[in-house]
Figure 1 (tube, rainbow, N blue to C red):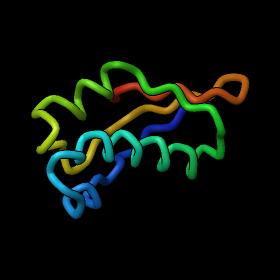
Figure 2: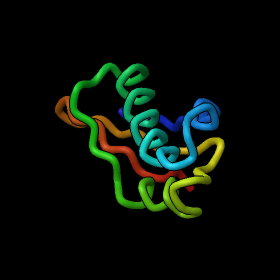
Figure 3: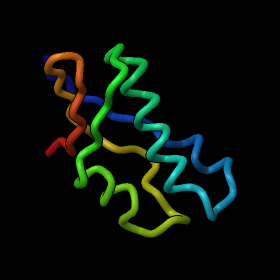
Amino acid sequence: MERIYVIPLRKVKNVPRTIRSPKAVRLVKEFIKKHMKAEEINIDSSVNEKLWERGIKKPPSKIKVKATEEDGIVAVTLAE
């Protein structure tokens, strides 16, 4: 199963500046866990680099990802 999601990261703006990018990574995992109904989630390094692109204080407000499920494991990659 393969799905493309646009994940809103607006909630990141309500946390202290020094933990915004780590919080964005957690929000991506929570979003995928909720929508794909999976326990094990692997985030690709391209998604991580996109979230950390502008540093710890300024993650993007939304991100477009592709989630692919195989054998109960969801792989999250950057959608182009």
